[in-house]
Amino acid sequence: MNKLQHLLKAILICLLTFCWSFPAYAVTVENVSNPRTTYSGWVTDQASILGDKTKTHLNKKIGLLEAQTGIELAIVTISETSAALSVKSFTTKLFNYWQIGKVEDNNGILFLVSLKDRRVEIETGSGIEKVISNSKIREIIEQDIEPLFQEKEYDVGVLIAIDDLIAELKSGDQVSITSIPLVLREFLLLWLLLIFAVPIIALIWGIIRAKRKGSSYFAYMSNNYESNSSDYSVSGDSDFGGGSSDGGGDCDSW
Image: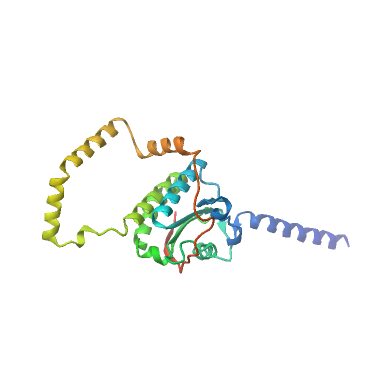
């Protein structure tokens, strides 16, 4: 009887240890807090790798992007996904579970970081695929995210990547100068040079003065945090707009 009791006790301890350790990091789609319904924001940092000032700045930038273009961009960090799903499958499932993007435009983006998996996923709706290519998304991941994440500079990596992503999204509907015939292009460039010579010189002078003052991207970010970290306000709907994804975008490990 004593042997049976010891055996049952050992089995119980093993089961408790397994149940305690397994869910400590793994996350299911239903466990991820929706930032739109939680606080009308755009960032969920369940892996706790982003500072408060970073999250405030990201919320403001994405809120402005949504107001100007209608694009919905969600940022999610998690410890790791459940064993039942790959990080890619998890990202697609979460995208569709939240329905990121406007339903009529399908213009949603999910930027997901799985910390223990060392994986970054940028998932897009079909409307975004017309604006920014998967190869450009891969370029942003490789150039902005991977080097900084390898040094555990998560805040800076996410900030720079989102800045570049937003810049691409805002310029995606502009006409490329390379699509203009050569002769007309040369005439246009000459005309623009003559017309805008004075503003260009003034701009160059302003840049030189700014450099003399020791300004930099990171100094700007720091000043922006200090002056705006406490005045974040939200507007618009308190949920995502009904979009979906069929797995567009790109991903990589760091």
